[in-house]
Length: 72
Image 1 (cartoon, rainbow, N blue to C red):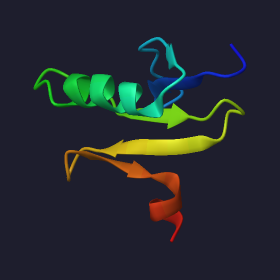
Image 2 (tube, rainbow, N blue to C red):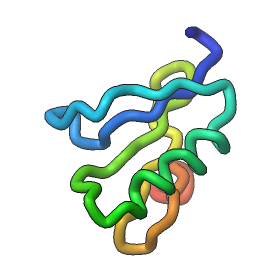
Image 3 (tube, rainbow, N blue to C red):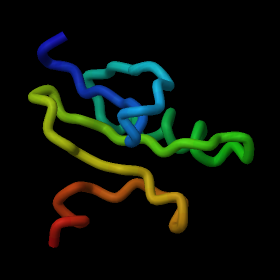
């Protein structure tokens, strides 16, 4: 799965599984639905195909924040 983005828990100690997609937008839509559920207790991150952080879900803003925006 070398060309796939992945989405997993932002806290490496929490295992919510891994979801793969060639599209980060698909993962953002899927992940936002998960994060907006009132019973969700962890946060998510999306990694690019090389394993570099692409985006994290900000629970306070209820939106994805791209790594480039976060580091700016």
